[in-house]
Image 1: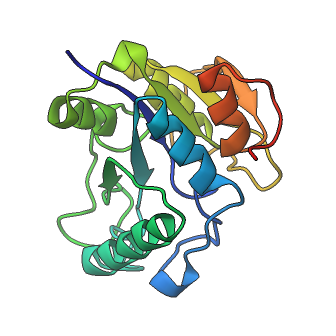
Image 2: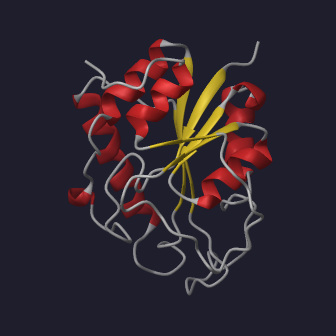
Length: 194
């Protein structure tokens, strides 16, 4: 029987978004992220990061550096007793300048390719899953994959990427941060985790 998952965007949702993160030393978990991930996993959800990383296509960092950033992300989560079940990224962008990466890709949100890939590889029932992110592209990707969606509305949340054609898609819910999103998913009252 396929499992359920919470797909989570990376920048501005799990970690601070400084722009194009190029150094593992810049990984900063947002408040409450580890507790939210632990509570979701304890409730039987797989937690899977799905993130656009066009900085690779644009030449700002290599996939090797990106892997080091993700290793640091996992290390910081583990330090707080939290873990990810999967981490998927799209290094492609049609406006990139690095050969082989400057292409269209169905992995790039708002397309649902990363969610479909994770569903196949991790045996996830998308209709019983959620997508949480701070951008319209996250919501569109989640909807296109058949997931319920939560858009984070905290200050500093992502704005629209004007290079991406978006269909007007409203989230099922809005939340201030991942902590509140986890409470919505788990059907708990909106109060801080203890």
